[in-house]
Image (cartoon, rainbow, N blue to C red; front, side, top):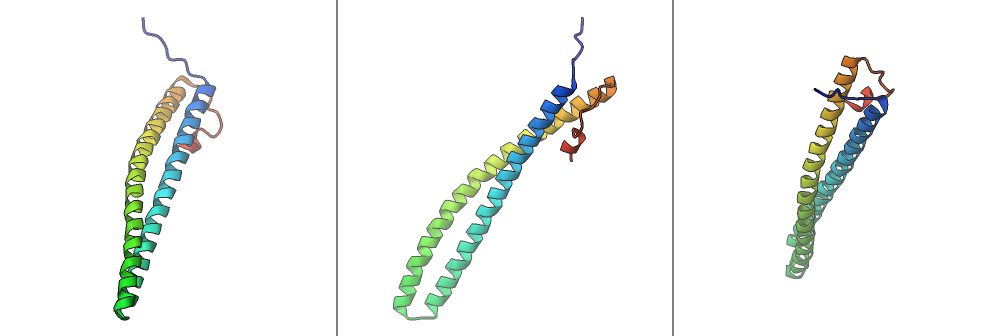
Length: 127
């Protein structure tokens, strides 16, 4: 004998809360990734300016510029590693959010099918 799925509005609300949290996590990671990429671009610009200024000056200034540029390049390498880690986290968070949305959509479809009253704000979770 098949068991009927029991759904109540509080379960729909719980699924919506999971989707909201996973979306917030994804947004936070994406924002952090954007910031890291911006910082890496800023460091690259700084490095290029330092090297250009050094090459327009004498040998002592060129050596100092090369040293400062190397330090910036090391920071850029560290940022590149951080970006890679964040990209992996972003992919995982994206998968989690997609699964949460799919679960909520399926629950909403079932709830509509059986005539369950929808809690307010449930549909807003799904873009």
